[in-house]
Amino acid sequence: MKKIIHIVVFLGIIALIYFLSERYFFRLDLTSEKRYSLSDNTKNLLKGLEEELDVTIYLDGDLNSGFLRLRKATMELLDEFDAYAGKSVKYRFDNPSAGATKEQREKKYEELEKEGIRGIMVYDREEEGESRQKIVYPWVKISYKGKTRNINLLKNIPHKSGEENLNISIETLEYELTDALRIITTTKVPKVVFLEGHDEYPELLVADFMQTLSHYYRVDRGVMSGQIGELKDYEAVIIAAPMKKFSESDKFVIDQYIMQGGRVLWIMDGARITLDSLSTSSRTIGIENDVNLTDMLFKYGVRINGNLLQDVQCSLIPVNTAREGDATKYEPMPWYYSPLLLTVPVHPISKNVAPVKTEFVSSIDFVNDNEKIRKTPLLVTSSGTHIQNVPSIVSMDVINIEQNGFYFNTRNVMAGAVMEGVFPSAFTNRMVPQGVTGAKEIISESKPTKMVIVSDGDVICNEVQGKGSNAIPMALGYDRYMNQRFGNGDFLLNAVNYLTDDDGWMQLRSREIQMRLLNKARVKGMHQFFKVFNIVVPILSILLFGLVFYFVRKWKYTRAISVSKQVEDKKSE
Image 1 (cartoon, rainbow, N blue to C red):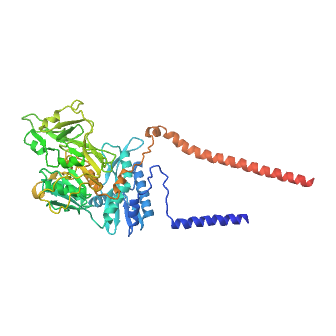
Image 2: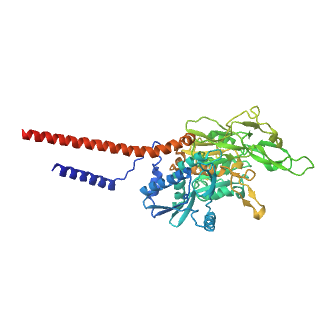
Image 3: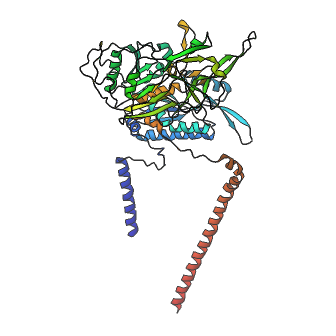
């Protein structure tokens, strides 16, 4: 009877657990960094799916341990997606290199190339020391309601090891997948605008960045008319390298837009000088770039200084090193006026972003301490920087300067920043400027808002190949002489996304997963021990268990026989 009661109770507990699991869904993440926990934003996005989400993972086939980790992390994340999704998330693996013949594989590669999915060549070193190369496609394609989006999972940040880049790729998986999912599921497209009328960069010179933004926003360009509220429909305003002074009416419209919670990306030169002016002469003059915004920015808490930064961490420039009369001979030389700015890893905008290429960049200072405003550096120079005040001579002879601590005696000079909080108006206790229409009153304090400041116009400028109608914009941040693409596009896109992000999506870029790597040297030195250990220990364990089981059983039956004999002896007595 007691056994029957135990069985009934056990079955009742199972039934109760099943009932509760059907009604209440929960998952436990026991990892220290909560690597398997999705954000609330992601869960809400997934719950809103109205149709099945189809995912193709191209990261498959013969992979090394690093890419296997990325593959496993992607699969586990998609399993989490499926657990919370309103409709199912179906994923499958597709190995582009699975073709039986070389022709089949190359055909598959061409098809993927047309879709913008490019493989990378990976060189693996085997235990014997031989190097083996193979093509890997760290890409994912998601499809929803007939729309598709390709996602490159692999982050490739220069100066970081392969293991570090793979770890960063795993850290940003949730952001990358949800970012693509938001693009193809959104029904309301927000708007951003590039201001014109102050000799800002024309559309051709910012075409690549505008194309990137068009995946997220409706991108407009326009001249302000002095009408209050003409910017209110835009999530962010982009001011891209103005060279002419802003009128007081334009400044007032921008100021009141900020006071109502508007966001601005300020990309401005502190000094006026271009590389083109050095093409006909080896020297020119750099002067301060006064566009009548200094007082406005100062009121908000920042100042772009009138100087030029030279840095030992810089891009290269081709220089003719041949003697006069000899054949032309170009060699790459360090162009100190083109610093490669370091991205500060403490903010979602700049975290895990490659160095940003600049040219004739100026320094930035925070001013007017205000407890209502949080200020964070985003871009800084290296530990070897020289500050050149203007007006002064800018000469090609700078390439001959020795890289020593006497000349490059400054470090980590700020050239990009974000400010968040409640800003004071630059027009407090002032009259409404002439030419402004629709202004009923001056708002003296802003709603909580944010702005990003970068002290170099070239950071947003893409190079152009060809002339006239044949001009084609090149990728933003691409340096043809170094054959390398820098982080300009990623940084600026993150900046605009952060400015317009009211739901905290960008915080997903701040996730950190601790690297727990094996000591490769020690593992290699003890690999023979581990081989023997893995073979011998299981066998010894089985033998030990068998012996213990045998003696326990023998002892048990011997004892039972002894007890039985004692009972029989008592009966006979």
